Image (cartoon, rainbow, N blue to C red; front, side, top):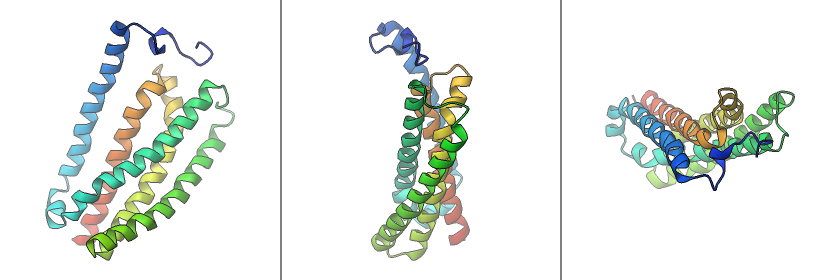
Length: 187
């Protein structure tokens, strides 16, 4: 455990009196960040009223970014725990993960854009969600790759806190891009 940078608090058999408060802190932080994401959505209330389909599709943008970021985050945390990720190779890893995010962003933006078009009969809506997915998957890959090292440098367990921070970023960026582009296009 010490080789992986863990202590008794991270042990799956640690006493509940240590584990519950440690996890609870991050649940509280997650709640605050969820309000941040809600505030971003609230900034686009007029656009949402104009194009209700946006509200229906918002979870798709957030979910795609969340999964893409979690994949990168997991790979890096695992690599750190195994001693395979460090300052010598992080730049190459970031480049690789951003390329993966870009490729997946391009592919899945076409799939989701087409699905949105077929579902709602609105080409513009398909275009808007496609752009948001490309941006969110690239940002998710970048943040998912860089975040573990940053958290570790701040003495914060990336395995425990990474998901909360990553979710906030992918939700905020995803909602802002999706609703921001929609506001520009539908205005």
